[in-house]
Length: 581
Image (cartoon, rainbow, N blue to C red; front, top):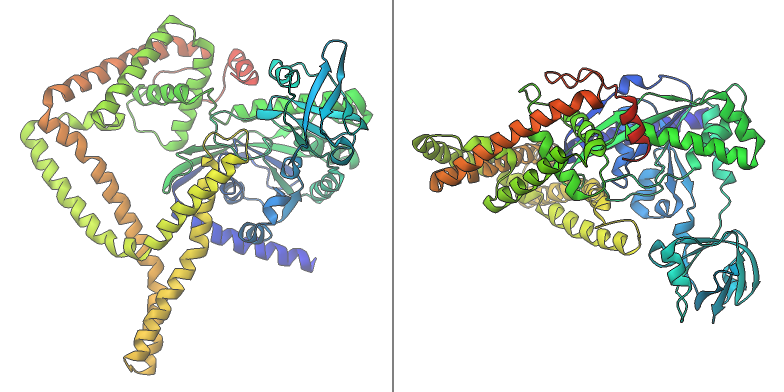
């Protein structure tokens, strides 16, 4: 009991520090649906998409209002800084097979893909040294995964099921064979037992079912581990009622400093008793129970996240959302996320409709025009001013920019070493992460994490150094002992406030700076900017008209004057979400 109290105290202290850092790193973090979280009882928070490596868990910790234990890769626990910080917040280390993967010796090939598709042969291989039954062979570029049934010799083994993917067969039937990786089978029974115990004690577990962080626009396929944890705990402890809470993590420029985030909690999922009974039976029934529960979780997470197939689709969705005029009012970021999600649902259902195809082409053309002028969509309405007013407003804002720049200068200089270090180190870590991953696009999912960690370590270190410099100056100046103590203490106390104030001043300055270009363009090229405004207004009307026509078919309670009245969707759109859009 004493150890638990000490662990909870460390958890609360760490959370307090993390909250401060999150408030510095993000301009805004808005929770949505947190009232749905049960105040007591065992919970599994299932969060996705995992777009911000070690920042995602901190946001869940901050907003879920429960103490939670995290499943974290054992590899991460071995990293000095990350391992120490993670040890403060009830971690459950998990050994992941991909962290132990190694390059295979020699090359492998399939000699008879039709008559004997289960027998893999090797050239200069050492199967008896590198493989055991249940281990997995990974083909290049994740073309296929082959689980091993039996190792016969150094150059021959049998796999459990024949490869069916075209790309996998192409690799295995090459004349010279193919390179491969060895993925060991790891028994996770110890991890599951610890999770069962945590849940039986009424505690909470947080898991990211995608298995690892990534920087894609859509969620990756889920691992079945979360279903084994939930069903296994209820099977082991009869009467235990484990709830699963879906957590949607939605970022606006996830890796950027002073960006925004929305975390949305869905309705808790109650696990049916029949699935628990199926799980107890084992075999195919157990797999079926896990599969059904995983589908339910995936569908629930689809309902609290924004998922698109590619960057272009996401860009079109976001542009259409900005141009749509539901009630002519400003939306807060949680409503922006909700509207994006509704647009994705509608787009997935009507993407082949000629009206939607036509709008998509117009939006892409409009975006290209904005890019040509160096503008953002939200800046276009600001260029609708008379020439003399534009000139005076430009002069005024330039003066304001100078003032904000002067006010932010002291803190900017003091924190410049942190900015340079964070940018350089995060870029290096992103390259390393990209090189070791087959799912990342640019490794952006680790950028915010390393910026965050650099700030967490260097901020107090740098402030301590500045305080020592002031102390040295005081000692050299032969001041009284009261002054010698007071000035360093004042320096240490005021530095965080000066830095934070300078950051906010700089933030305001950046906003003013971004507003200068549309005013400049309106002054030097009024005809082009007038055409751009007219084009935007016409496109906005077209988008609003089409959405108001399609909306009632997608959402049964659609109201063009209040699209946020309810979160209920039609059966058709929910089905579309479950299928992955």
